[in-house]
Image: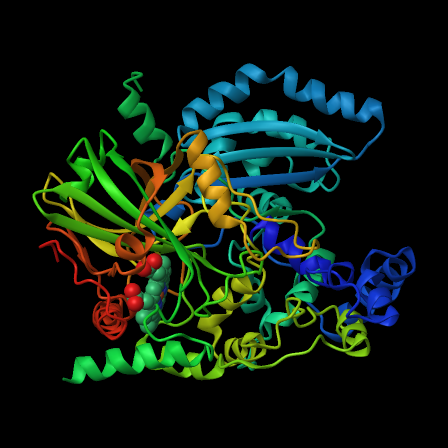
Length: 253
Length: 339
Ligand code: HEM
């Protein structure tokens, strides 16, 4: 879903506001049109409407990572947006995480070179979370498997700092569990098409969709998945794998 | 004969959605402006498509920008789809047209569905939703029905929305069309040719592709909360071209197995290989708008060897529908041999 459609959907009251129609609309309409921006309505929405609708029309937590498709273009330059809660979110805990990465830069870079299918990878601290964002080619489980094989020891140092991380250390001996652990922390990627969000939420029995329900669908999905990737993202050279690019650029590997 | 009947039904269906349609004008995209310029193919364009426009270094083009509505009354500031019809003139009397619009997808996947859709989209009288109804929408965390534009008494929004709710394929286009807004300039919107075409490359490989024009000056829409201005797009374009050119880059996405090759309701993922096919530079507004623009008849199936229509049934039906419409409105037959 484009950010623009999401935000327009969220305005709830569209577009040509009552001010633009002035003269032809009554005071009540003006009040109602401005309501979504009022603190009272926002309070009501947050504390009553959202919990009510989340209870009334529950939306499941959506799975992280890119959706499976058969098209080759969907299997290159895939995003991993790993968001991992730190055990110790204090500046000291965060500094420990920064150090764990800094001390292992050589291992990480060598490991990524060995994996060979990664375009970009970086670590980011956001509030209480350590994030790893990467763009990789091919199957997710293979990516993680290769990664553990080449830099399992670094993973252990990092995972030890994360809430719930102890259960999967040493990662080299808990490969399958670790893959699940990572997958559970990989962000849900909101579909690029707005109506695909409705389709994903639809249970099998429903034959009709109601596009007017999109704002609620989005709100409830964000209630279930607080952190998400908005769409599949921009690519400057879509459709090419890291290996193809290296080959075309003639950089020797 | 059968073809002609479908063409006629399509044109009449389109026309029926605009009760103030004037004979002798286009039944949709009625208000427009013609501009001339040049297209320069990129260095790689010819590798992917051997059609003349992508092999010649530079050639003249005629472009007609339009508002999507079939009403003869110009409402530039209303939320509406915009059109960009381009005729490439690579020389030797050849011509190729590319019709594009600001929606990246179409409402229906086939002709029958389109005929039903136009019925559903027949204008009904509209009023602003009552404040109480809006309040209920808000409490339900749902979109209220869009407000009619000031002075608008009839539109097809509610009918389209109801149709889309019954037919999932229409949802994306209806949703997006509902909030498409108005561009600040015809030169500041992205236009999509929507359908899949089959291009033949220099290597003989045939590839399914979709085209979009991307404005070099960027995309920008008007403030949707401000009062709508009825006439500004033509003047803006004249002023812009008086100061320099307006440019668009032609982007081509290459489809893959699993993509909706024949279904214009499904855009392809942004992850498809994207090739820059060339740059369009618009130079000036055509002097004789009546003869050299309004009377011109574009056709999405007017192609040249090296590019062909896909099996998209909407695209295929448009060939005769546009010809029928152009005969009806007395458009000048295309003076060029192509297609
Ligand atoms: C079944 C589907 C469609 C039908 C029946 C239809 C019908 C028409 C007709 C009858 C005209 C007027 C032609 C004339 O008299 O010159 C027209 C114009 C136009 N249509 Fe369509 N259309 C369809 C789909 C589309 C799609 C998918 C696009 C976008 C890719 C599109 C873009 C345009 C544009 C840009 C114009 C204006 C051309 C100009 O400036 O002369 N149409 N359409």
